[in-house]
Image (tube, rainbow, N blue to C red; front, side, top):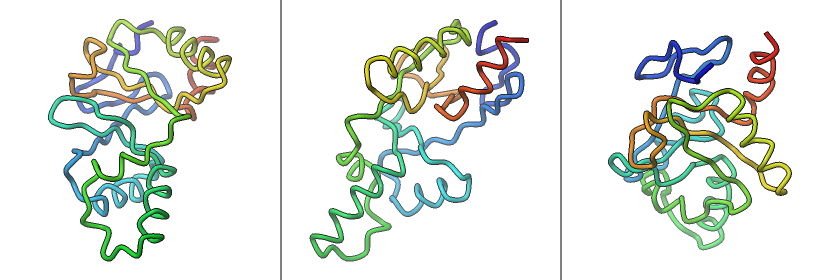
Length: 154
């Protein structure tokens, strides 16, 4: 079964997995981005510059950036652009991009491969053709693994 079966452009659901997706532009103020994270209870957001995926803004990245800014005695921070914050992206976490032909097994293999390599796969960003140069239509995060595993047992 492909990820895309039954999905709509803005996300939707696949089985019992919610695929609703929120992204941010890299030029938006960090205050707006973190409000989206807070309001949606997200710990990570894909960051785009136009149609190109630039990275994954995580709560850990925000915390690293905030600590550095406070240590430097910086003033008002919420208007700083997300692209500035992304310089503090943690190197031990990652994401992959998959296309519409990806299966649940493909996703679980990615999570497992990263784990066996001693790395954390935070998210799989889903696009039509699996390219970073496409806008996303869905996201699967590490927290979704139990739902993915139960879906293949059905």
